[in-house]
Length: 80
Image 1 (spheres, helix red, strand yellow):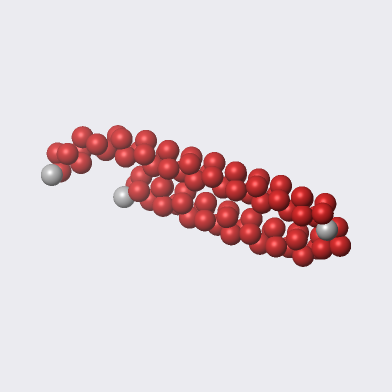
Image 2: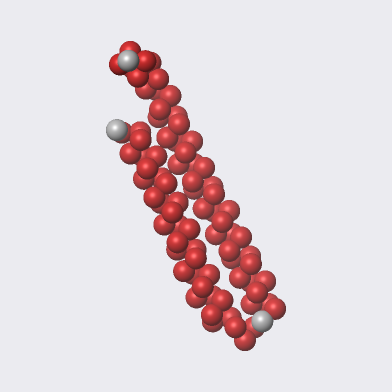
């Protein structure tokens, strides 16, 4: 059992790195889509720009929090 774990130990670091990269890329794409949709909504309804902007910031913060959580989980899987 421990022999198998010793053999795949270098691969675990690679998996954690790939997982962290996917989380960061996904967060970047998600925040980009949020910003694009918010700008389109502000262009359609300029009078609601304050509400749209505040909602955009809250949602972007939530996406960034999930991405940070995913990167932390990948880092913990690397060291534990």
